[in-house]
Image (cartoon, rainbow, N blue to C red; front, side):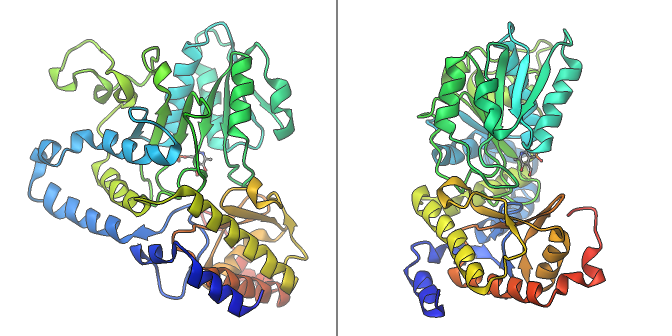
Length: 411
Ligand SMILES: Cc1ncc(COP(=O)(O)O)c(C=O)c1O
């Protein structure tokens, strides 16, 4: 594709104006919004305001005057339209891991005659760890975590399965599951489904209500741009809310936390998923960050994200720089989320060489270079430039320099 055509794509981009809503270092190409989203200007301002005014000046009064106490509900409702969820089904709290624990435990109590959590071998490991942990403390000791390959999920859905736990967009390959179909198939077998939307929320249009999803979790720090350690969210379909009993019965999930009753009585609706005091600084920042999505058509976002990925592959094919890579993601852009996964035995070193040249990508063990395309702040010319830089790294075998093999704690 010619530079003229790339310029034209930028000129016609309906999301071009969104980039100005972000703080981005000059000259840097950020292909890691699927790990940690960039900083929205509004989030930066809110962080300063919460610290200086709300905490600094208004102190404890802010629980009421700045409605800190309602922030989990407010932020949940702001996320809900992006998930295709009607009011009263999403709340912001804790991390994905903690929320999965709550949901899996709740779902298992709704399915006492079944003993299997079914998931996928290459699901995000933390999700599997949580299910394993539940197995270790299950009263009967019979809870089983059954892991199958991607193409074995349907076959493994039988009457022993209580819960199907899947990640909608695979964290490594980016492959998307057919949420509607798998949810329906599971329900046909009496199985409840918990979807992990970490790599979907804010990147892929979702229709949780329409797909009759039971439960879902997702995080605030990737495509929602809520910042490092930003709190996560829970979706629970209205039809289940009266039957749920989640095990982390903390005071914020109590029907009347400030009655200081010695007996636990769960709140109605989504508040029952709260546990301890919400992290107001990060939740307030996420609240502000979500404003960049206001009035946005998720399909427009999705179209651009697909085009960014396609442009990358086209440009890379022109330069031949992917000759040594294996495309781990689906080739069809409708089948993958907002990312590309490229397999190479030296993927770690290649990633480091890219970062050294101002292209931030990431590495997933053992051998995947992961490139995220966050459509709110990436331009088509950034993609074209990142391919040029990758081509240089590959042609000059720059990644072979010893310094690029040095691993730090976080890869
Ligand atoms: C798919 C997926 N699930 C779960 C997690 C873990 O989330 P948390 O650290 O919020 O528990 C991640 C983290 O990146 C993830 O990518």
